[in-house]
Image 1 (cartoon, rainbow, N blue to C red):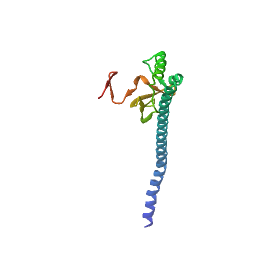
Image 2 (cartoon, one colour):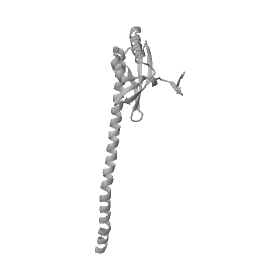
Image 3 (spheres, rainbow, N blue to C red):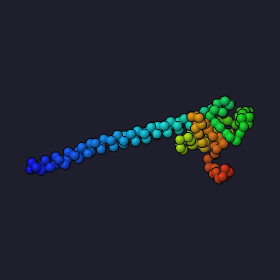
Image 4 (tube, helix red, strand yellow):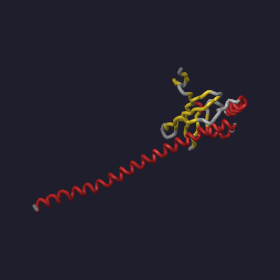
Length: 164
């Protein structure tokens, strides 16, 4: 019986040693991978919050007729600065402004430098839903107004086709 116990000790001791020496590094690796995922997910939620704040800042700038802030939080490659400034001025003259602050319906991160934000607002007594791409430019989130779409629009080769 003593020989059997010695035999078990000879087999079990290397198994424990093997498990200990190879198990610890794999646990460390597993914890490192999990912590990297947590950092990634927290940076993702931080990016989404920053992009959403950019949308709120945009609507506030339009409401207050603040062209400088509007210029910081949005870009539009289809309009010159003069046209953007005059458009904002005409919106205020004609009273075409959102009646209350916007409501963010959803936000989805796409890659490292884009968040798609779906926004609802009331304009002229009618609820409007727009989808704004918010992109990272020089470490600042800005709305890409040239690619903003109304809900339900389909884009084919840069042509906008409304769905009814």
